[in-house]
Length: 286
Ligand code: GUN
Image (cartoon, rainbow, N blue to C red):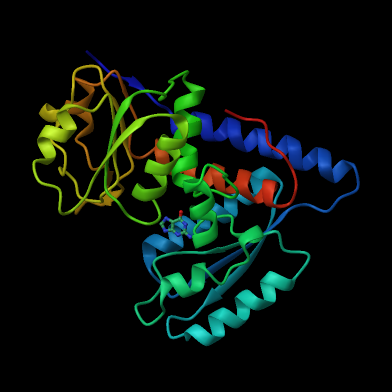
């Protein structure tokens, strides 16, 4: 079997177009454009690239972006004060603080300080809790983007046996909650899981979100499975690779996301959607 591609670059472009249409319509009715505050602390090169992509996407989506680039030695008090200011600023609809933060700042204190209504990353404990209780509000971008990508291609995960490899707060856990909400049967594998191979072999839909190339071997993949690779790994030659070896996985999977060009662009486009929705602009998309 040669897998069909879940083309995140294509679908994210369509989602951004939909956001653009919705924000333009709102603007023409006399409302201001939605506004996203993007906060970057320190000079991690990968984070700088992600933030640049997010700011560029705002332009395409008809969303105003405001930049807050803070030095590495910013203390938690100063960061929380900035968030206070953005929380009470009525011209700001969404607040994004790029993770990871420098080690001296506690991330959960920061993500839980952002107003729940402006939490376009969906990382606030109350927003994750709402998703867990089947009352979704603002939801984490990567998992929501994966669900949109699957729906766009007509893939219905209801009743499917899904294995999610990775249980991080920002991807693996909320991914599992999205799938549970969809009606999938979900196995979550993590660093303490024994016999990972046996779990992976049973997956009709396999989602890998670890950040370690080769964590899942291609010959473990069930014939005709759907493979969603959320890993982004910078190799020594400078190229980006996923957690799964793409070429060999294509021989077994029915559908697969490439890296780059799969889940990454869907995350950014979903951030645009969440920002529009935080501003009260509904976006109709799978
Ligand atoms: N770091 C890696 N992924 C993300 C994300 O989706 N949002 C934020 N804020 N930081 C990240």
